[in-house]
Image (cartoon, rainbow, N blue to C red; front, side):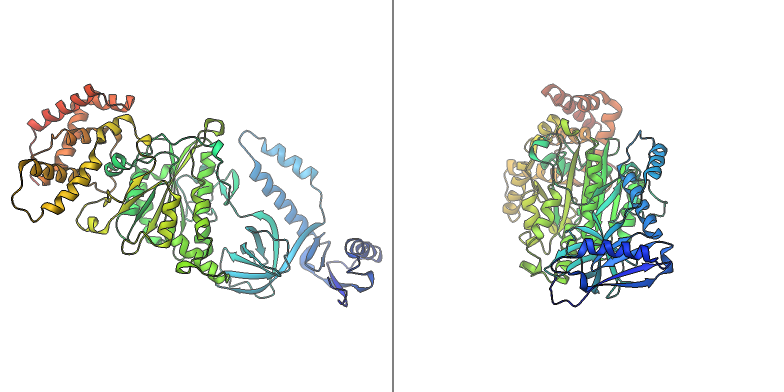
Length: 592
């Protein structure tokens, strides 16, 4: 502080006017704390203010620092102590004993808090002066009760994003540090619930009993804490599980234009985890509230909400809540991962997440870059997706499998955000509008889709049954283009085209009807064994459905063997083909 300053003002708020002895002790405290070369004793002035709201005691404010000896301060300190105690509780602790000890040992400290003042507020952003030691990502509390998070640190001020409406915040409003990073409550009771980005229930089913508190920003597991991805995370979608398998701990991007079935793939994947011990977290960013409500209804109808948590930051929520929602969802997922469980998390979608972050960055006056996104937008998603991993046994053996969703504009996968997320993930499933409009659903483009984990994440049975299906489809697509204007085709070409059409028809799959691994293996064996050749295209799905029912009723031992061994020997494959041919001999197409 400059020597030119005429006075260093301190304010003492009280209920009962202090005695001369108390006043002398307070002045000695100020002199001991603040007298220096910059603040000589002569320039310190003490202003006395009566404040009945304190309940008792004193509050001393010196510059931007506040010392609280009041009844109100005692209450707050005790509440904070209980809150910290609650966060550290784990199963098996004697809660009453701990609380009794806490009450007995509690002593009022001169609560030292840094207090700043709002210099600007608007558009979900507040600029604050007087908090020079605030840390990036720290939670601040405004005097009206609204919380904010430090998002920008400048030379003489900080900027915070607000987690609520700014109607009650004014220029000059007081702001206090909490010295805590932004976090979210976690626990088993969150399963089956819909919460907002702060972990507060929004489904009308009452409060949630949390057992711990996790920061929303956590470092990703190190390389030595991980193990290789080699266990399948089955989606139940034949086109994906056969050609672009996803493993537990993998990050597979779902990318495509608007209304091409991206969320449908995520939804089917969640439904397919029923009975497999997988916890699912669905994070909705910038979606319509009605869309999320419909999705939750679908999950309830399939019994999938029992193992699913929905984190919703809808389009009507402020940009700060949309920004932190994926990190909050990931913290919920990490709670289960570090307990040794496998978790599937869906980010729907990160395009809207990037847009929310861009809005915040521009309001914070950060320089715009490509497509007006800030320069750290890559780090925005990389630090999120790197938290997905498969842990080794020493760390519990849990995993987080991430399925981020990106929306493209007119199929442009070379735009800024799509290329960023493609480079972060371990593969992508590209959904094409043209295929979707042709009735091929899921509209997976075989050429642009890839899984960098590949066959390592498939069971041996699936790997062998899938065989060369991807190559066959690629050849079919190419041949179809070259032969569409030709009228004179040889028998071999006609057979290849017919087989390709059957494969394309088999890969069509209705929403909400995922296939088990055994059903997929049987379907692929029958298709690649040409059992379905010469069946009318319109009857292929009917044939598949009736074949699978026939196998369950007449050859359940084959399904059991595939399920228990996860392998497909030549002998077992021949038995599947024989059973399929037996069914084919008596097959009667549906009247429909």
